[in-house]
Image (tube, rainbow, N blue to C red; front, top):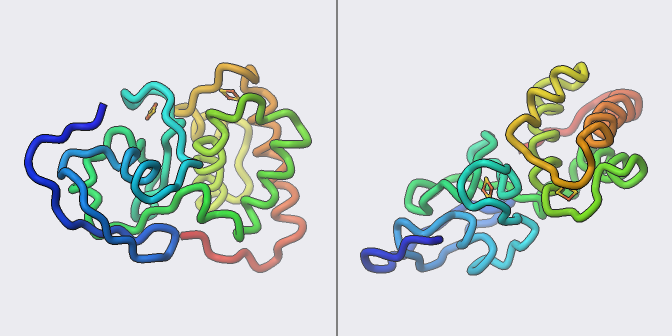
Length: 171
Ligand code: FES
Ligand code: FES
């Protein structure tokens, strides 16, 4: 649950490349600001305790659980949510393979899985299955049994490396 002690303050974030200014309590969770104030409901809440990864976003390029980040700590940061990644070729490949190979079922874990996978492919374009398992270890899924997700990421990496000789940048 979000913490609302203290007075609301004017804060700003650069979300998916756009400056967003809003008023929030300093200890309010980044997750609640993204979903409630900025309308970015692609970021999901699972456990609310930093255990499941469904609220994952990229903050200054690093994968974080937005349910654990007080918004004051994120002040001025570059935040990338699932909505900001739809132009990236890695995401296009991941979206295709998650759909084709059954990597998404109820969908609660999917945005976090895709952000974690995207972060992996940015750093390691041709990961092994072990690399994929390790990179997604902080993201829990109740539906798929994981193997479809790992296969979807591996297949996306294959397609991406075949079709994109000049990878675009991912923020
Ligand atoms: S909702 Fe943030 S880690 Fe589970
Ligand atoms: S698809 Fe339902 S939790 Fe992963």
